[in-house]
Length: 406
Image (cartoon, rainbow, N blue to C red; front, side, top):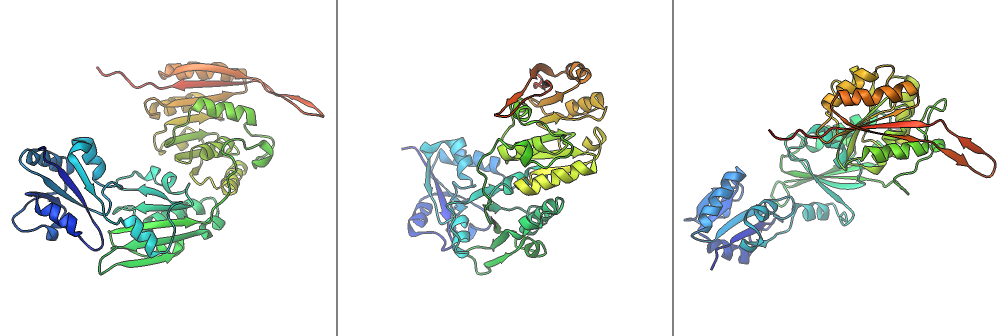
């Protein structure tokens, strides 16, 4: 008979009798330092990390006997279970979960969790954290040494303060559960500001709860619902076509260069809450409009960058998508810099009103090695009282394809 891996979850009350019996029948046990005291004497103990080395040792030991793997809570929920399934397959794996830290945390705070999102920030890069947390009205976060509860609260406060959004700050309640199930368990609840000034044990989870805001639709904001100045806004129909051409990913980075009112950035954030969006604009009046629209539509994954491209682009994270709505006369320099930073399989879109721009942009993108296609869009609006014909807009799209391996 083939040997098995018994993946055993450890809950707040330790091992169940059944789990203990399974482990007793295994000559080899994989355990972290936190769980080693549960292993009977005489067993070979393999450290749970580094994971790759552990997997190799487990594969060797399976040839001669069963192996027990001890993990916290439910090992199929942000645990080692996923890795074991990928490497050894379901046939060799038998899972015995325990009460998870998720269930414990929500039960301690008497908070329902069937409407919550779940995020692990272990090893996440900074630019991808806000889009994981901000779109949700209730989210439980697995933290790490860098992304601690206080650090996350400071990051959220910085983001909201940048657009003067005290109303959203006040709608947050933060709940931190430390050392769940242990003698030194501690529960802390407070505002973003209150939690930002405290320190916490490394073993914690944090719940962000925000009074919900209704969002009746994702795409379809109209010109008269977006704060703008002097009619300087990407028209509704053109904005829809532009977003189509951008083929926005669920996660990643979008640059909106010459953002104006921020209409494209705001619609992109509503469509893809997991995107980190940088709206680059130099005019104070337009910067105020972008911030107002962020507050109105709660699109805090849009970060406002004050300055002129291409200089303002230098320190931004590499983009998956780039939209050029305005260039301030620096089109060649912007395309060159943006194309150089654009990730493989990334897309750049430029909208042109002027014939000069419509002719220059494709050639500039081709010079940078992008594969270009061009569309021209004409819009005629009609209603009971009038017809409105808008000037044609040329939409130029460049795609950056990954280099073939040599």
